[in-house]
Image (cartoon, rainbow, N blue to C red; front, side, top):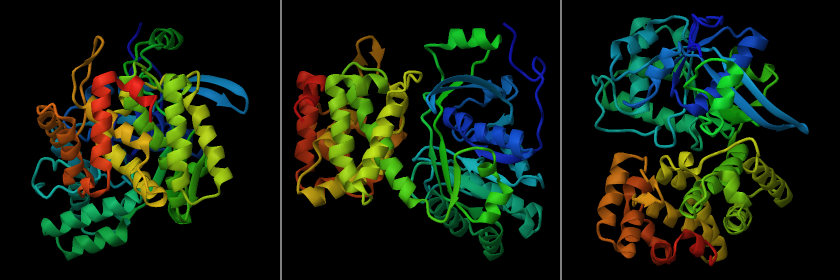
Length: 477
C-alpha cells in the first residue's frame, strides 16, 4: 500500500489560523472534523498546527503523514446505519515544544493566528508554581499558553487586534474560567507586567465549552478492513460515534468568527453551558469512569460488553439511575431519557470502545465526574453510594499494576499519583491503601477520610476485590 502524505493524495492547504494543544484521538475525531466541515461548508479556510502537550506524543507520526489521517464514523443516524470514512486534511503540521521551542514561539508571530483550542485531559488545566517563564517550555499547558501569549503581546507591541479566541475542551466545569485563572497566576508570579495583563484581559477571550462524542480511538480490531477500503497506509486512523455535541458559552460575535453552528453541525453557542455540562458529565462521563475498572477487572474489555453483561450491566444501571441521576436538579423524565440515550450510545454495535483507553488519568476523572455526585448522594440519602465507591476501589486495584491474564496492567496518570499508589500498595494493606488515597490532597484538594464511613467502605471493597475478584464483588453491592 502507498504511504499517506500530501504527495500521494491531492488535498487542500489552508492558512494556519488555529493552534491546537493536543494531537490525540479525541481532538482529531471531534474538533478537527468540525473544522474540516467548517472549511467545506462555510468557507472558514483555516488550518491547524497541533502542539504536543507532553514530552512523549504523536507529532512525529502526524508529521510523517503531513497531518493527514482518516476518520471512521459509525452509528445509527435517523434510523440509518452509518459507516463512513473521511480523509481529514486540516492539520498542517505538528510541533513538539520540548524539542522545538523556538518554532513553537514563532506561532505567536503569525498575524493570521486567531484561535487556540485544547484538550489536555482534566489534569491538563493546572497551575504549577515551579514553572518558570524562561522554561523551554513550561511543563503545564496554561504555562505554555502564557509563554505564547506573552510572546505575541511583545511581537505586536500590545496590538489589541492580535488577541486570541481560546476554546478549552477539557472536561471540567467552567474550563474557560479555570484556564484564565491559571494564566492570571502565571502573569503575577512571572512578573509579566500590567500592560500585558491588560492586553490579555481586553484582547483575548477564553470561552468555556462542553464537548460530547465517544471516541474509541485507533480501531485495532477492524484496521485491516479499513486500510483495504482506503487503499493506503494510515497509522492515525481514528474511530468515533456519529453523535456529537459542542456547547460553547460565548457571544454572537465569537460565533460569527467561528461559524461552526452554520456548518450543519450540532454546535451551540449559549449564554450558559452549565445545564448541558452537569447532565453530560454526570450521566455519561461519570458512569464511564467507574464502569471501566469494574469491567476490566471482571474480564471485560469494551464499554458495550460492560453494559450488556448481566452483572456488570446491572452495576452500570445502578450507578447511572440510582446513584448519579438523583443528584441532578433537572426534570426526572428528561434525565431518564438522556440516561437511556447514553446507554444506547454505549451499546453502539459499530464502536468498540476499550475500557483501558478510558482509564487514562482515572483519579482526576473520578474527582471531576463522580466525586460531586458521591457527596450530594451522601448528603441527601445519609449513606454512601455503593456503586461509585466500588468504582473507586476498582481504580485503586487497577493502579496496583500486575497482570490480568496475559495482559500487563500499566496505569497511566500523573507521576505523583502513580508513585503514591506504588508506595501504598507496598503495604499490601487495603485499609492503608484506602486511607492513603483518600488523604491525598494532591488528588482531591481535601482529605476525603473526613466523609463518614468512606474509608472503611472503600477498604472493604478493595479487600473483597483481592479476595474474590471484581466480578463477584460487583454482585453484592
